[in-house]
Image 1 (cartoon, helix red, strand yellow):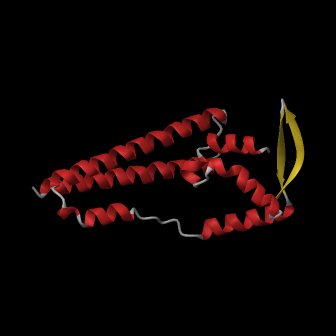
Image 2: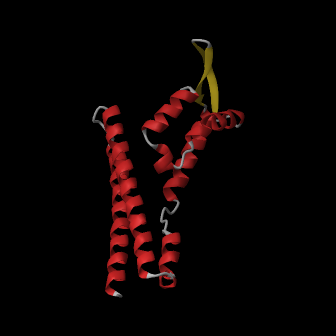
Image 3: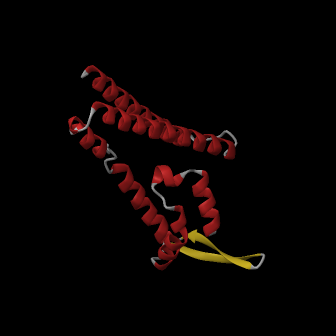
Length: 165
């Protein structure tokens, strides 16, 4: 694939959101992987007045990819919302109304995130002609669950604030 094709595929899958991939840094990453021997230019295609390099993964790249996948699968993925926890630990330093306002803003952000993930899934489903692989659906379902769990947590914190007054 060319760098442009890779960017398009990553945008389609919303990789920046769920995978932490910085789509704008693809060309830099390709050059670095080429220098390290993980990808190689297989052809140069002419498109109008521009040329685009087409890359393929090398044998060394395939071995490295397998190592990255194994490492990713065995690394703990538990991430706590430590900033939120810190803020809640000191909530009594603010007025109840300030806390409510901030938590409602957090809830709004979570709603926006849920909707963005949902739109991404719908676009992916359309692009894949309603044939999303089961493992990808499992990932998406887990993302929705995590967002929903955070929304429930915020709602409980808001309810707790209401009982303290």
